[in-house]
Image 1 (spheres, rainbow, N blue to C red):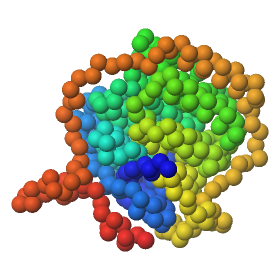
Image 2 (cartoon, rainbow, N blue to C red):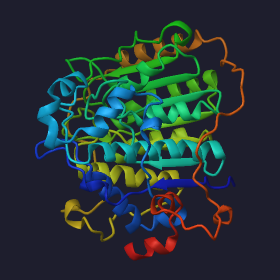
Image 3 (cartoon, rainbow, N blue to C red):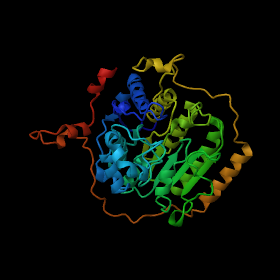
Length: 419
């Protein structure tokens, strides 16, 4: 029997306090609901749980332009009228509104993804989970699609300091355009995205013909889907494609974006996946036994999002949990059935067998164009920050600043209060 994976989990119970606006579909509150369910099911006992720190401007600038990061750091709703040109320039408007605590929100979710990558690099975890992350649309100097800082790109850049090849898999209903664009011309990162394409659907990228360029040709894999795809249709295409990718690319680490807007009934999505079908993608990726960073992403029916990511936490822990949701702080949200899993809806699956088969054949042809996994001339690992797991490393005569204390692993005793 294989040993269970060592899992670490980034939890900030205050994340639900950030607020995009009354009519905005993005609700950070959903992350608080996931954390609460994770506590209610007792899964925190089976993981190393960490409180997110704040990423520095220097860390965020490893991918993003310094003037963009500095703008996010300085601007607030109170002084927005003085920065109209910059708000326009950096696309902090419309779907990406300026709200109180925006920069701190970005610092937290980005730091958790970066530190999750570092846990994998240090070998102190096999799987790292940050449900607050996965904001895959943000560009180098531009907010996009509710995303301001692209924590995924930052985490992958961190992983590349140690691992020769990183595979990025995206099961959000929207194309992972920001991540694909960042690594479009390299063969050290393969991006694989299953998403809705066509009918002017945001962001409008991710055609099957988009396959990378230069050294990265064939290292961008896109599987454009139509409305209404079901669990079984998705599985029949996801698994063979990912299996072939693993065989050809031989990744050293995986980043899996689990956008829950691909679930049935999402406010902005159009797929027909259940929590179990979505979770089977996570289970399949986990089965390869490769160090994996698991992130959130989209998801705009918050009750479904909380159900989905709670279920997927249990999948990553190899832990069976009850379909009956235990009592928790958000109990009323799960009425009237109080069940963990959601069912398919009665909508048409516009993805015919012939269409899906043609897509799969084309993707396989592109993958066969890769003759072998790229080799990398490895150099000495650049200095980087690793949160310490060992209290013995600390000088007992030095009083630590609270921000340093917060970087350390939370003890189980802290979370006993939430049982």
